[in-house]
Amino acid sequence: MADGAKSKAEAKTTEKNGSQVMLDVLAKNNVDMCWGYPGGAILPFYDELYSSKIKHFLMRHEQGAVHAAEGFAKATGKLGMCIATSGPGATNLITGITDAKMDSVPILALTGQVSTAVIGSDAFQECDTYGMSIPITKYNALVRHADDVARVTQEAITVATALRPGPALIDFPKDVQTGLTKVTKPVMRVPERHYKKPQLKGDFDRLIAAIQKAERPLLYVGGGAVTGNAYKQIRELAEKVDIPVFMTLMGLGAFPAEHKLSLGMVGMHGTAYAAKAVEEADFIFALGARFDDRVALNAQDFARRAVKAMVDIDEAEINKRIAVDIHIVGDLKDVLTELNKRVKKTTRRAWVDRITKLKEENPLRFNTHPGSIKPQETIYELWKKTKGQAVITTDVGQHQMWAAQYYTFNEPRNWITSGGLGTMGFGFPAAIGAKLGRPDKDVFVISGDGSFQMCIQELATIAMYQIPVKILLFNNGFLGMVRQWQELFYQNRFSESTMNYNPDFVKICSGYDIPAKRIDKQSELSAGLDFLVNSKTSALLEVTIPESEKVYPMIASGARYEQLVDFNAKSDKGTEIRVRMNAAKK
Image 1 (cartoon, rainbow, N blue to C red):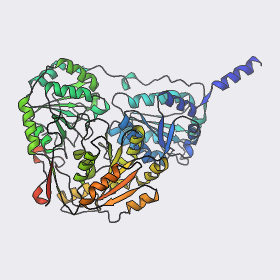
Image 2: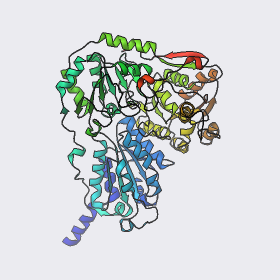
Image 3: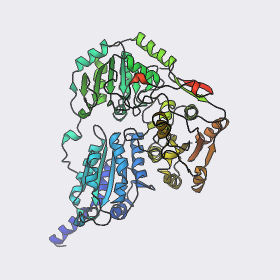
Image 4: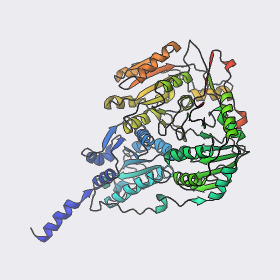
């Protein structure tokens, strides 16, 4: 063979197309599953995916794909990946990408795009995915040449999973997917500040002195404790210096719920004893939490008697909503490791005794009625039947708050919900991702008749792949949380919150060969839950609940903690149940 012909043959064998290069980089980063929905502009990539070892799950809507990727990421701590075509496929991912940005979830969204030659010409199914996704991603790129695929893919994965995690998006034109390149190994250009841990910055001596001096301190634990894998260090600090702990909705599981120092969830629908403890505290130490408006409802008056300290890896969160007295910027696990070395063993018997008394005097409460089923009792009984070991995902609304209150978590990553964005439709597809990521765990989605219908089509997905996701569906014929606010603040004007027509959910499940039951009397509850818990396949239990049932305690938006409204047993005739799950355990 002539030298020229030989060199051309060698060049040809070393070349790969853009799709092949991307799949190679994904595999080297241990991406082994993804969720998506194909279409014209992403077909070349799907053609290469056909022979890849990466397992793809066909969802029934792009929103389902991105939420499944989120559920996988939240349940495992790994990168979740979703795929969609251009135009409407890409725009259908926008809600989930925003959700991931708000909750710091590491996902990679891959979208098809029209060929580079026609970008900007309003070609069929063209949209500016890159431009739309700028404010809702940590990293995004429109790849214009196959030579850039390896670099961009590696940058997207690295940035999405580093520091404070979040979503990345790659917009992948059709001709770049098929274009050939010799550049198969990534050389990143993104600045190190986007993925390299910063040096710890702050006044450790002042923070330690404040911790030791405080008489009534509290640890305020948020979702950053889960994403930062700092839960062991939090428990060590709490026990070493005898500080009670309250958690945000996203922080549940970062500290054992049944620990004697746990105050459970705080905020708008947190426990009454957590709210009262915040009012009495003289030192609040925020760990991976951002003083958001569902916790620090009235920013000016939140814990006004307390010195406030904060640790966060994202310096932009410091003093963003509430000015703190002391702050440390850095990785939470690293900061706590250093603190645990330097703080002295401390006993705060009087304060811990006070916390115990607050729990005894202000437990979670609800009434039961023989003729109807209460959602609080349903979730509490589910917790008991599963021994608190299941992975729970939820949609958004009243059922979400009841689940946060009555299914308590002793471990991280067993609680998966949409916090910052509050996305209805999140819970069911997220459960699919969670179950595939952690097949050894029972996974339950707790949903409502409003939320469930937003992604109900994913019943086809769990039937097609035989994914044993178990669905607890509350049906009150209303958008429950909307109704609650309309009753309390809008003089019972239930404007468009009534679900005047709901389908027969049990019949819908039968169309997918999914076992399903409906119950509406308290006497049916135990057997109904046994049906769901003991099912070896996916199953649905529909529970009819009173339309006027409310979530208590409640602090109205913008109100002060002392304005908390708690459950009044006299206003709801029946048998009162008082629940305090962490009475004396450690």
